[in-house]
Structures are given as structure tokens and as C-alpha cells.
Amino acid sequence: MNVTYRVDNDILYIALEGRIDATNATEAEEKIFNIKNENAGKHTVVDAENLEYISSAGLRVILRLRKEDPKLAIINVAAAVYEIFDMTGFTDMVTVEKAYPRMSVEGCEFIAKGANGAVYRYDDETILKTYFAKDALPEIKQERENARRAFVLGINTAIPYGIVRVGEGYGTVTELLNATSITKLIRKSPDDLSEAVKYYVDMLKNIHSVEVEDGLVPDMKETALDWANFVSAHIPEEQGKKLCDLINAVPKQNTLMHGDYHTNNIMVQDGEPLLIDMDTLCMGHPVFELGSMFNAFIGYAELDHNVTMDFFGYTYEASEKFWNMALKMYLGTDDEKVCESVAEKAMIIGYTRMMRRAIRRPEEAESPAKIARCKEMLEVLLNKVDTLVF
Image (cartoon, rainbow, N blue to C red; front, side):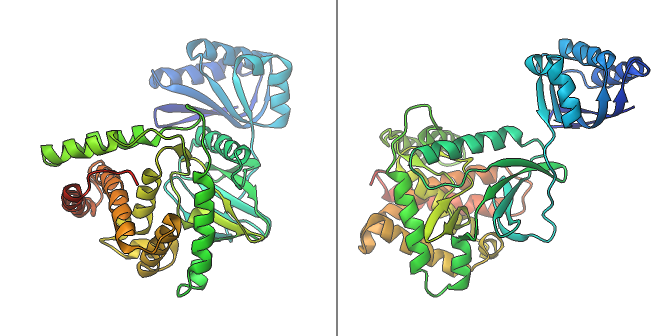
């Protein structure tokens, strides 16, 4: 029997290894509670990945631990050990999660990277998404629920069918037979974006055609107001007030939105676009979706065009062209003035979000330049735009 521990984001992970029975339960209890006392106030998770057996004496130790921490969870439990927990009724009292199968991304084709994880082609039939956070299970479960909701609402989306362990973290597997991303289509034909743009806009219009009930997904207007209230303290008072007023004036809409809609998150399978990466599903006026799109294609790479190549694998020029073509097709017009007007509204949302992000990350070398750029552009745009509605 061996007991080790680690602390991650105020969560105390206590790892049990080997066998815990009548011969060593007292010793195990002493070690566990010494660790617990040294890390008082932290939520406890028992990692049973290497636990081979636990007797009734060991179960009593777990019960005493649960009395101190009613939210105790036990994770990575092998099938034989899970049967013991289940047979004795522990699964009715404590969160007990079975061990997940292990997979590796070594040798896999890299598809894309986002804020929360990276996506790989595991084989011809399977996509594997890995998550950067070591304890990403709540995020994974929420994303799977969002995918199911979108599917029921008529959105062609890929639902992850399994959770796996990848290194120290977690991942999800999704069946996507012979699917390719829109990003890959652009890389293949950067001079002819028409096919990629059509797939992209068709899916976007499909998403925005759906109305959802209040409370089903987050309201993006509330989130954008939080960004504006934060940023208003860092720009002239008059501009800050107008920024908040503009967002406040956007009418409440229950239009479904993806929230992180860029070409890495749309696959094409059998001639149909398929949505992935559903953790940002939300609702609101489409201007908030367009603001996120502007940042992905233009904003984040404005000062360093290499950012586009690192993120998408195609050039900033192709990204800028794609944004302009997609906006025209989405709006259904070639009128440059109309498109420019809507783009400026989206840019206000985009720069507000980007400025807040840069202020909150002062350790990043590019943050001062980004803050200055956002201030400059918000000043220009807020003098021109009197409504975010289109």
C-alpha cells in the first residue's frame, strides 16, 4: 500500500496504490489524514487508478474521510474495485467514477488547437480531443451535453461517445469517418475559398435559425456586458458609458450561437458541414457571434500575422479574405457599405473582449501592444457606431 498526493487548483488529489485491507488500513488512514490536515480547506479527490483491492477496513477509512469532506469524489476506479464500491452501496453515497481507457496522441495527425484543448485525427474513423486542464471532466460533460442539445435542436453536430485518459489529463473520442476540417480545405486551396466559405456560412445560418428556451444555454449579452463593464474602467469615461449603453441596447434574443465559430470547429463529412467543440454554446444577437469570428480571423493576429499561421495553418491574408467573403455571404449582400457597417459593430465586441483578455494577462509580452490597439480602435469605432443591431 502506498499513499501519495498532489494539489491542483485548490483540489487535493490523494492517490492510493496497491491493496488496502485489515493489515494496513490503520497505516493508510494515518497517512491520508496527515495529508488532509496539511492541506486543510481543500476539496479532496481520491485517485484510485492504481488501487488493486480495498476491504471493508479500507472502506471505513474512506467513510471517515467523507465525513470530513461531504463532496469527496473517487476517480479512476478499476472495474474490480468499482464492483466492491457498488456492491457495498458506496456508489449511492459518494461520487465514484470508473477508470477511463488510455489513449495517446503520439503519431496522430494534428488538426487544430483552441483555448481549452487540441484536436487530433486518431485514425480514419476517430477524432481525439485532448483538454489542457488536468481536471477537465466537468468541462467535458458540459460539452457533451451541449452537443446533445444542439443535435436535438437540428444542428448537424458530432457527439463525443467516450471519455479517455491522455497523459495526465482527459480527452474525448468522436466518430468522424473520413471527415476533414474547413481549415484543411483552405490550406489545400487558399486561392479559391468559395467552397470553404459556403460550408462555413451554411452551418452558421443553420445555427442562427434555431431559437432556444431561456436558461438552456448562457446568454451572451450578459457575458459581453461583463466585458464592457471591465473595459470601461480602462478607457475614457464617456467612451466606457457608450460602450455599455450600446450593449445594453441590444435586444434580448434567444438565437442559438456556437460562441467560438471558426474554421477549426467545422468538419466536412460526406459533403455536409459538421459542428464540433461545443463547450461555448450560447444564445443572443448574432452580433456577438460575429465579434468572436472577427477576433479569430483578424483581431488576435492583427499585430502579429504569424498568429494566424500558428492557429489555423494558413496565412493572415487568406484569413482576412475568408472573413470578408463569409460576412458578405452571411448578410446576403455585396454592398461594401452594408458589410463595413456590420463589421464595425462586430469589431466593437471583438476589441472589447480582446482588451479585457490582454489586461487580465499582463505577463504576456504582447499585452501592452494589444491594449493600446484595442483602445485606439474602440475610440474610432465608438465615435462612428450608434447601434450594434443589424
